[in-house]
Image (cartoon, rainbow, N blue to C red; front, side, top):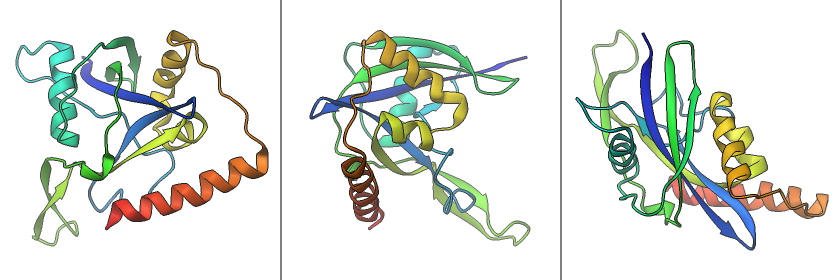
Length: 180
């Protein structure tokens, strides 16, 4: 039997460059992991909740922000053999420095008897498409591709030296600020 999860992929344009917002999982296991672990804010339905209502609730729980507007249905993708994820896209700009997540209890270190509360999401980030595809879980890349197709967006090329400098420097500086 499959488990269904529903989420919202925010997107915005900065200087005509498409960016998507992803979240990084909280907790000690994920603390030092970066590439391939970021995700679209998503979660499981409660009771007989409608899928889009689940996505909106989970977005608020994981970010602290309401998600309202014109949603673009990106459909479903299998995240694993037993998990199916349904995602909607929404064009909206958020100040990610104000992201606040719900928490969960976890015994850490394992078998220590010490239970700590950890945020479900420890940070959020806006990423251009090239970097987002490196950061996001590989099973969710298809949602970014679908969004690009629906909004008829193709990546704009920047000079290589500028592209590398901007992604490395601005990305590093921005993530340092979020962690404070």
